[in-house]
Image (cartoon, rainbow, N blue to C red; front, side, top):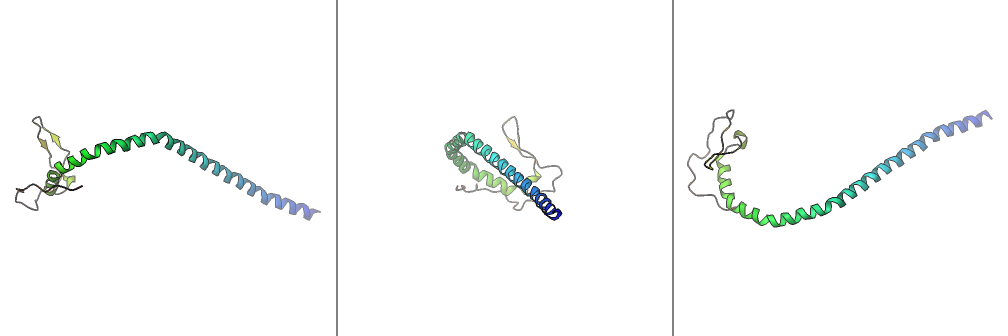
Length: 127
């Protein structure tokens, strides 16, 4: 009889962790399901705003392309002149409208790769 009680106690003791583990697994599934429901709701709320941004981007894209075509050559020329952008401070707009880009005091001495000035503007950038 004692053997039977010991066997039953052993079975119950080993089954208890299994039932606890199952409850924990179900808890994780409920947490995951709740997170999925939250994210679905969030996406449904954001969907109109995302669609509106897509429309705005479509309207603005031609203006950005035009600006890139006009400014591209000048920016390419500036980037060819600058040795490393990290060596310069943020641009400053002077009272007369000129834009000044100062070299940082801690930057190494500037050594241009091509000492001759560029006479021709760079070509247009195709986007």
